[in-house]
Image: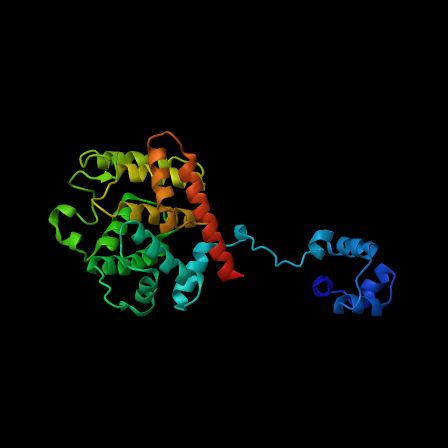
Amino acid sequence: MLGDKIKLYRENKKMTQNDIADILDVSAGTISKYESGALEPSIESLKRLAELFGISIDELLNDEKEKLDLSKINVLDILREQKEMKLKGNLYHQTQVSFAYNTNHIEGSTLTEDQTRYIFETNTILFEGDTIAKVDDILETANHFKLVDYMLNVADEPLTEEMMKMFHKILKEGTMDSRKDWFNVGEYKKLANEAGTMQTSSPKQTPKDMQKLMEWYNSLSEITIKEIIEFHARFEKIHPFQDGNGRVGRMVAFKECLKNNIVPFIILDKDKLFYYRGLKEYQNKTEKGYLIDTCLNAQDQYSSMIEYYLK
């Protein structure tokens, strides 16, 4: 309400109703009526109030809540603080559930978002009717929660190959894959793999390609979201691990956004076809914009999440 805003700005200026009245050349009772909503200021009074408060008339009249200035928020600090609080219903809590559900579902997990949330909140699995869940789906969901916590601990550290290997190890620990010697959990692949229909680096070439990728990334004088998206596309083209590359790659992108104080992004399962198309076109060097737009849209969605939980 306009009256509330006049009162708020007046008090912020440490001024009395009499002070304002003297400036506007009206009575103190008139200012009281402005603030109670019993009387609307004239156009001339609105101009003088806006000038006095150092704002525009539009700002004075606008009844909408002020938009959260995300540039002044350190998302990493907030996530770390909320992680330690161990409370439900905050940005950290929703990030854990949304990230685990969507990134695993993109890769074929059959768990629902409710089941994912239940695992995070209770460390148990919720079954409905005759629902059957794969043990690996449950393990990788629980592992993803651990991975996010580890990522938050090291988010402000420089990205290294060893760190990415640790991401993979945490994600795949205890799964059926981890019991296969050839799978090489926490290390680069031993056998050839592919990303959809895209040819990837051979096992022999992978260490060299990853070294080149890191040399390029570490040579950058500035990291923006576009460089992080570029890194992600190159990482997925190499596909350095036997499996789990998408989830590790998306975790790396989230970490690097946090490190560089950029609003991070979570690719949602509903947008996976746009994401896959974007990666394919980016890697084929036919079109970069599709993947960039998909990631920027995901960033907007995470920005909305931040605003919801921090306003």
